[in-house]
Image: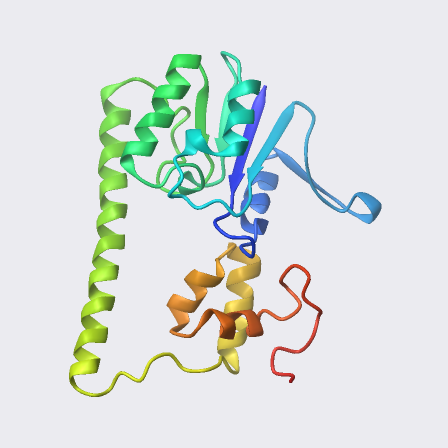
Length: 220
């Protein structure tokens, strides 16, 4: 049995990017008409944790409990990207230990660890590469946060920091809408990247968010 797991961090974060990756891998199929949407192909079980922060360990998430109930020795657990399942090294090793104990293969479809047939393989090479790549990723996130904080502090000291601009305009709106639709970027991540408030991002995403009417991002 092939088991697929997906996760989004917030209620407004799109799962579209993950679904496209899984569809390209032959695990999901896109249907039109009455049954429009993405559906697992025969022999695939799909479990999703929407609006679930990565701060919650993978094994403690509601959908992963269903994964645990469905998994049997020889099954393959597949995710589009590793951070959808695990965010830090501790969680990665916890999930790998879970897979090893149950004889479940762990596959990642994109990113630097996508070349491994089984990320849960109990060998020194797999352990080393996972440790290095995860540590580098964490270092990059920490460095970015540090540089952002230093930049704001320097701007404030020089009297140049005036907070976030009120709105997105022009090409920046299209950039935000594309990142949300095609990359599954969250509103929080888009707000940080663009240096605006989350409200400004929601305005730019008019018509793309759940329960939001389709209107021009610039309309009043």
